[in-house]
Length: 290
Image (tube, helix red, strand yellow):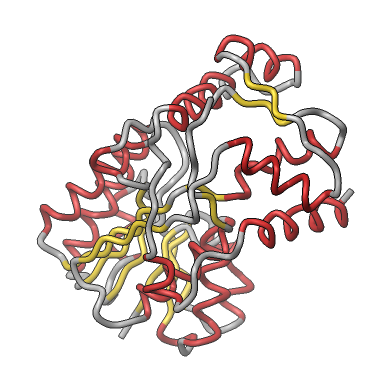
């Protein structure tokens, strides 16, 4: 049985591989990475490191050869680019005779109004079209996505948002990685959809928990999208990133990440890490690196 993880040198893929190496013999593990030199530590542990580039479909033929179970980690980039890249990966998996694809999707992907939803809608559809057994890991939102806001609070700024009362099912990246590893290496996950979400919280609720962790009140500044964009520009956020951040706030405001689910418990035997503990880990990490 050969298990392969794409994007294994990224932050998420690195966590997945660390987990898999604790439970799966290294000779059963392979990775497909754009730059194999970044995976030398995996190679040293006995993992089969293969070069594969979603922009060069021909490279994926060798990368996916002999693979039984594939974890397709969604790539970075705009929707159009990611849809094309993922389609290349799915087609290569079909050519290679892969028997199972686990895919890191998005909360409530098919019904979502999230700005990233088109990528995941298209990729889920492409996987379904192949007839290959699948598991869609519909990840909500990484708590780590809020690090810049947490850094701002540590520097004395308020919690800034234009998301109004929209809720988010935040969870640590580690929780999502453990779920992905469990599905890839486990049994009985064929043709499943897992909504992986922490307890949905509003911005005010998140800020209140952050205040508990920091031992101080964290004021929340609710603004409109234009004011939010203005602050981001003033903070030095690159011009091309600002509209994306505004769209994320809009996506939260319309409820695209307000998904309640106990699927973490189904996969991990426990709920997602409590938000207090997750924020404490992040804050401790920021303080150690400051």
